[in-house]
Length: 264
Image 1: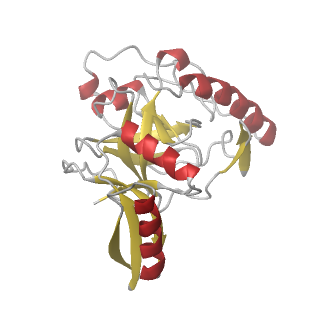
Image 2 (image 1 turned 90 degrees about the horizontal axis):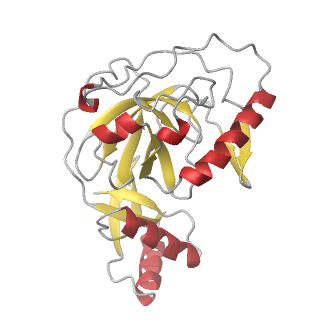
């Protein structure tokens, strides 16, 4: 089970209070209560992206949880992020999500800190290539280093229940045709990106610093972004979540606070 659950429990209550206090619009009728366990979670269909109005609850301009401020995005358009996913289940089943709907651990939903509610995203397990589409209707996870909290069924379909976490890519689905099923994705070689620079010399200096600290696998990857060279400093590859978390924590101690997951 994911290690973020105790922290999430506290944060969920805080978000509910904050969001309820920020929005004065009348609540919509509540949807049906959570469903019973499906006989085969693998057969549960993915969420189908569709146009929905922003929820009356759960979308303040910003909110604070455990001393940190989160700014809700104005749109999900173009959102793409890689990082660590966790999942939440029995302890929250049937409780209200941040947009006022009851949480159904057997549905295809997820929680995210900043995407507008509701939103639809495709989540891909970068280790095994499995991919699902979920509807984001909750806030969280509030554990450092986690970017999305999956429902029990979504986590099962990604094969991440046992470990509790997985290295994933999260991409918003906002365009026509986004409901088309994705083909099987190839498992990727994953790295920790310690920085990205427009000048190669700056990237070289960071690599030299990291190698002096014992990061022998530090290297520079050159990419073209909008017609200009971008030099990415990476460490790895990393085999899993534990190694990724450990590298990010070590980089923070060196004053590098924006390390992130990168795929080859």
